[in-house]
Amino acid sequence: MGVGTGTGATDAVDGECALICAVRAGDTDLVRILLREDSDPDHLDAAFRLAVRMHAGHIAQLLLQYGADSRPSRREDLIPLSEGVDSGSPALFEALLGHEIRDRYSATELLEARDLARRWYETGVEAELRRRTGSRDAVVRTRVQDDEYYSVAEFTLGGMNVRDGHGAILTYTEELVGVRTTFEELMDRALAYAEQENHPTWSSVTMLLAGRRDQATWTVAAALRTNPDPSRRLFGAEVLRLTHLFDDSDEDAFAGPALDMFTDWSAEETDLAVLTEVLVALGEHNDPRAEAALLPHAGHPDARVRRAVAQGLGEWSSPPAFSGDARRVLLRLMADPDAVVRKTACCKIAGGRDNDSVLADAMAAALGDTDRLVQLAAVYGLALHNDERCVEAARLLGPPRRGSLEEEGYLDEAWRYEWRRDRR
Image 1 (cartoon, rainbow, N blue to C red):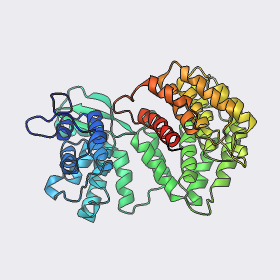
Image 2 (cartoon, rainbow, N blue to C red):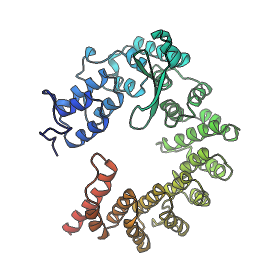
Image 3 (cartoon, rainbow, N blue to C red):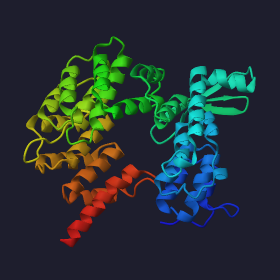
Image 4 (cartoon, rainbow, N blue to C red):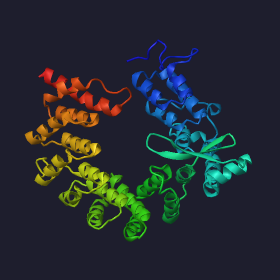
């Protein structure tokens, strides 16, 4: 579907295309909608350069995902690396150092960027802002989305806006220049943001350590299991989980140790966040031992734990089918008080290859759920199971909300079912 030509929000203004207007307005949601509807390659590259100059890292990364080509950009089209560091936005900094244009920056520039990031990180955003602006006014601090997955704190003082992602930028540049920072220093860097959910510094550190995939890193992370500080236990659990998750080698040397570790850990962990991480890790193992460790937590009072259980249960028998215990738990979780738990359980059944009529009827019953996403997940599941009931349900639910990729994905599956049915 193309962009309209009337006077709506997606229209061009003063000769600029709608995409450029949306980027200039900093409207990430509208940019995403326009890219889904009409990603004209003639405008993508210009929109990317504009987003970079505006320090809109989230939008710049989004444009790259939809095919923007950063290679034609001249050096004067892009901001200096130092300016990217000063912004404190990991999303913006990584957009500047995409694979296509990374070689435009010399080793000296990368080292200078690392040193600048370290100065920001060690001094602290507020202190550095006061030094640069000389202002004694109160600092305004807000929580902002830096990219699709991570959020940061943004500090405003004396007309300057700076985000607190310098720890992530420092971690990224250290890797680029070949510096192997110690486990302990990286952990301390991540723990500084332990109280901030989805902070890029925490995630950049855990992913970097997991990517090392060596026994020394594994041993240090595993030792954190008995640490009295739940934040350190959480950090260790995430490093261990990602080490196995990212291991795409044929040997998969960490699969067995990870399963042993998390099976025992799940029975003794008392902290909610750590337990949830451990259960998520168990769910990434297609093994009856993992299922046996997940099942006792299906009735946990916290919905986040029950979501992890629903997500982790799967088919591991041959031929593929849910075990009797997994079926019973998934059916129970489809009636859970929490809508996300219900949707997760429905999606798990949907993606399974167990064509059991009881499971199909449970998904059909979920078509009457009070939550739209649960209903859509049921449509999706019935479509995957070639169940005709998905067609009328999809029609009654109507089109997806504009810009919702999740709703589009669920309803597209119903369309695919109709296409398969009609071909037959």
